[in-house]
Length: 301
Ligand SMILES: C[S@@+](CC[C@H](N)C(=O)[O-])C[C@H]1O[C@@H](n2cnc3c(N)ncnc32)[C@H](O)[C@@H]1O
Image (cartoon, rainbow, N blue to C red; front, top):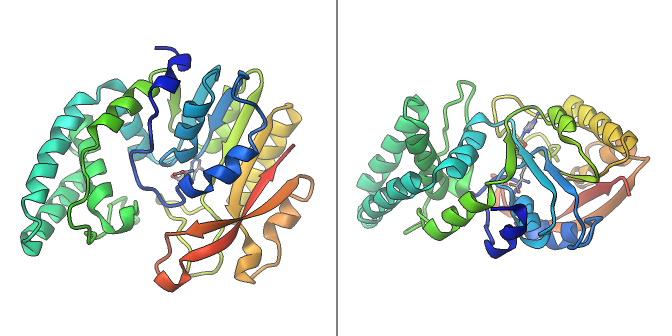
């Protein structure tokens, strides 16, 4: 199957992910510097659940080359396992779904089931198929669909309160499998994606957001947090793409909203185009702080 065929298989993100971009897509898509007939190389160095990536695959059938990357080993192993052979994952997820739904009215047994799967996942001794099915199961059933690990890389999100969550979306998993066939999937630091540049490259860059304040934000997807030093290293990466003559669009939090340091990104990206758009923040430990906030869309065009 070629990238051209992807328009026939509209894959959607198969995970919930902190910072998932689904609701920002209308704003981001308006700013993509190519039209749907053009051919270009699409590179996403922080793919997460790939909301933008799957949208781009659906809407730009002439993409020449697509590259996705994330530092999260488990996440990328999941993408690769789905790309290689999705059917055994579907079989396992079906089984989990039947077993879990059968416990809907018995909260205690449901909880025992969830925590036994979490424990098995954290042992990391299962082969990739089972480990992938456990990842999706936990993502569908845990609190808020968060992925959070402690210092020992143990997934520690508690059970969620969904009554009958959909655990096995087999149709979407099959279309995701097909749509990943010609995609290069990497598990490395964002800087290494520079090596993937070819003609007409466009980077959509969605890093862990800068914390708006010390307690409200969620940016620990993995063991290491993405601090201001990392934000500065990322800006230098953007400069490199710029010097090579390629295009990038970056999303981040608007640090003005936190009233901490005024305009961290306004200063850092003063050579580039900065737009503010309204977006709904859903991952916040304090429900009162979920709501509309400005987000930044910064580009070199
Ligand atoms: C804001 S999320 C991306 C969300 C994504 N756009 C979506 O729609 O789900 C940021 C991602 O960056 C990854 N990450 C953190 N540090 C990284 C690094 N140094 N290089 C590459 N990826 C990194 C995290 O694992 C996380 O998945």
